[in-house]
Image 1 (cartoon, rainbow over the protein chains, first blue to last red):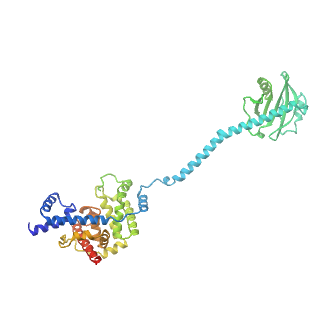
Image 2 (cartoon, chains in turn purple, orange):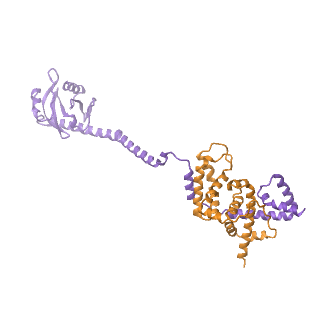
Image 3 (cartoon, one colour):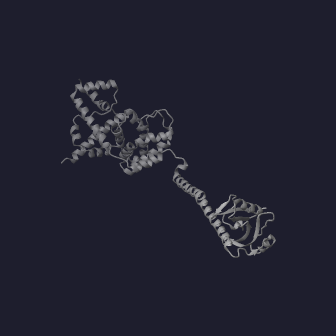
Length: 255
Length: 180
């Protein structure tokens, strides 16, 4: 091997180790290195240098904060609402809370409250009726004539009402007095049917805390109670009579 | 790291560019020799690359494209301009120089600490440092380095040869200085 050939191979050692020679040259240089101890030693030293530089060159590591900043800056743009998602979540939670509270109030609390009010009013009416029956003077105006009873209420209650003609009916008017419910004055009329007595209460509907316009009969401590509303007035008929009697008197009052 | 001829989506950029983050930062730090400047350089590189991603040609080398942006950004920075002005360079068309036979490289390799080698790399002119790092650390091919540095392959080869020789000499000098 001439010195010139040797020099030629030496020049190509770096490219050989960098993997930049074509396959033909690689094979030729492989052969030369197997035959030339000097060039093989040179190639080994250069290879060692490459490894030293490779190891020494990898010494700087970025911090995670920079990575996060860059990742955030190159991430595909999110829709505008994406940045507001925490606010959306809070708003949704608040709306759900309000909706839940409203449903709870409407479906659970309000009906319960309604029942409590109904029970209280019916209880008060039953008390008034019982105390009237127990009283030695159950009514303040004693008359079976509706033309006496109705005028008696004039100036005592803030409304007027009609009394039915009871002839040819089993009912008899006993009289009336002023009663109060929910601090509002109203008329209490006492009727008799056979040996039973029935109270008819008339109040302004607006003075009551709830709507009693419910056609079905209500029980009040074994008393029967009917109620209806007409011309802004709330009528209650309560007594220990048969439901049909109560209903018949109601129909008469409602004429 | 060639990107196929598919449509370039913003999400594609993230998928392609983020894995290069550590490598780009290491290279940036070698160029700037300063952590803060390296961070700024990498951040600016990503911003420019994202902005120009639509101009990237699918089918070409994405890694080389990213390193090229980083290197150009560095050269336009204050540190880069200063480094370029002090660069000692030989004509690029010089043939690769043969290694000096008489240099006891095995001794150098045995004695030189990693810190010493790192110091020697840092002292290399930028034009040598960058080509050496892209070849030895990033293990880029000459073609990829040429693309990243926007220079001919022949220039890559000659600069690489001189960079290796300069590094060896620098390490040798350091060893002489440190020996009693």
